[in-house]
Image (cartoon, rainbow, N blue to C red):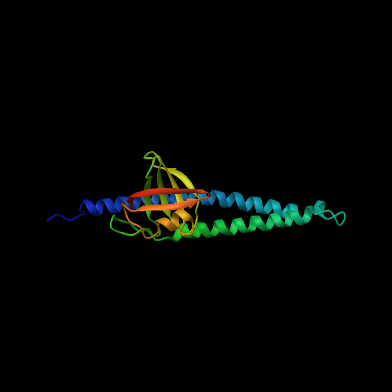
Length: 178
């Protein structure tokens, strides 16, 4: 008897390693965005508190506007920190065709009307809208709070999902879940 993994387990291990690499790439993107956002926040705070932004009269709102901008930058930094924490601590789960889609599922879908319209998605609790090219495929992060993520959650390979984005309704079939 040989020790080792059968094909099913080797594929499972490969998927896990690929997801680790994929998530590591998303972490790099978030870290870069965070560093830029922190720098922008510092610059905005310096501008908002600078001597040149003191109101010259009751109609001068430069300082107030800069304060609002600084607050928005601080919220962006907090959001990116939260995204980074989720990506760094998420439990990487491997999915199989008989498992319902949940957190950390890597999903491929195809438009039911246009075969060339295929998407690769990573279901995560945070970071919706992040995207990158991984192994020559564009990968988009979706969350359960988005219309597409909500439609996918709990579905299986072979299921069709319908969701609305803006005024358009889309229909896709789930072709793989890893």
